[in-house]
Image 1 (cartoon, rainbow, N blue to C red):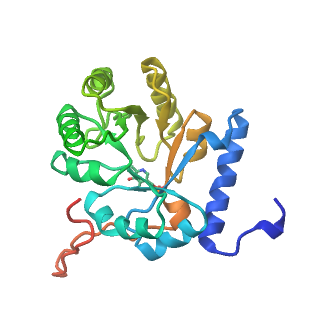
Image 2: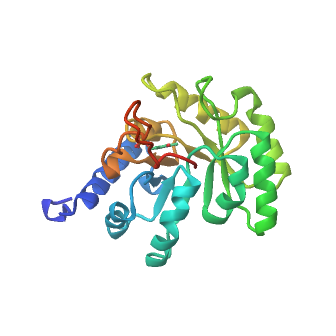
Length: 246
Ligand SMILES: *Cc1c(COP(=O)(O)O)cnc(C)c1O
């Protein structure tokens, strides 16, 4: 690239920087960056923050809450028809129908009860939404994701229910080296004959690509820092609204 091709718009600059880093990581492992899907995770950012990225050519976006997505995306999709929308967060079973109606890919299928709800929602909508099985790759108590030992059975159950499974997804434990967890997820996917790996976020997507990621979920590196998680401030009397519901 020549300096003349550096875009002036900040969103376009951040997008170009991420795409460059993706290409470098892909080249190091003899892969093509064209085989890696960049999911721009736009959670907490409003339409005005998202539009410049659409303007810069980004079409694949990720959100982690059904309700927030319902408020933002129908209007944005009217402006730009060919958006692909991924649900990257936890999904409650009672929101399965809404998720099936809105999203093109669901990354958080992690338990039999959700599988049942999604299968029913897909039957009702007459639409099969491809899913990733989320694996609790670090065996963390508080975290979503299917236990490693239960994952083959969940994959088999999804196949029985005619839910298209693209691959495996994980969020490794925070503050430790993620590479061993990415490598383990890749090994599990190979053993199940699954082609896609949803792994890698702003801090570790290059490592994830070098270990086989096909779908990276990048928020902060494209949009800047998110506002701090909204919580009621003790004693302030102010309840926050943004993160309620899902
Ligand atoms: C927020 C989120 C991301 C993006 O995280 P960044 O560190 O901002 O890139 C990726 N995956 C999931 C599941 C998320 O919730």
